[in-house]
Image 1 (cartoon, rainbow, N blue to C red):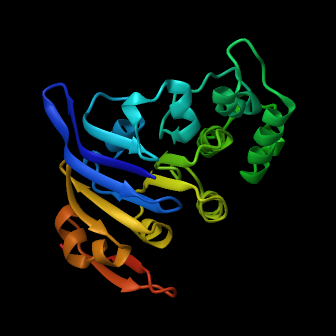
Image 2: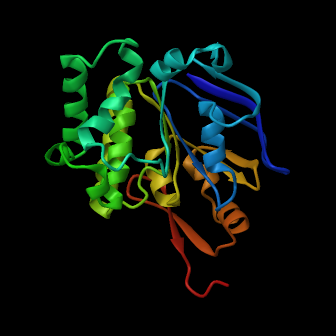
Length: 257
């Protein structure tokens, strides 16, 4: 469904990404993990086409560079980690922006656009906040509104940059479970960055470990979340054990250094 070949990004004089490949089939979830500064967010921005990059991105076998903005927006939605939110815009108004690719240049949103947006807000527990201004929201509420805009776009590919940042434990699980249900029910293809290694291993089909802008490992969670790889690239002493479902759970070992 989506692939990147030889993606490289230079910011200023520093090469942030170097020849990174990724490939995600329809309905799969790829989680990009790695220490701070590894290039995770930059990779998503390169795939989205919002930073200059070398290499090629294809979406549904179509070169992304050949797509006009509205066509691209119907194929791929992006929820950044820290977007600039207009403080006086309401929650429903901001989420409704996700319907922009389907509204003609001189037109306005339809009843169906409003219905889809309201449904997404309800699924993210944001319905009661629909008329509230963005400036009045907590950090966790703002994070969910950003996700709501992306989901309202109804694109088959969803890019999520740290979607659980600032969320409490219950809303973290709510968001992750919702994305997983959409993926399984609608064939949604998901590429996300995730800070929590255990969460990444619980939800994603495959993991891509970035370190200093390079792809250090790629594969199933049990292949990537090993004590050796985590210890080497995160400079941490950990113990990795299988959880109840067999997926790896990463534990910090106190006093390991």
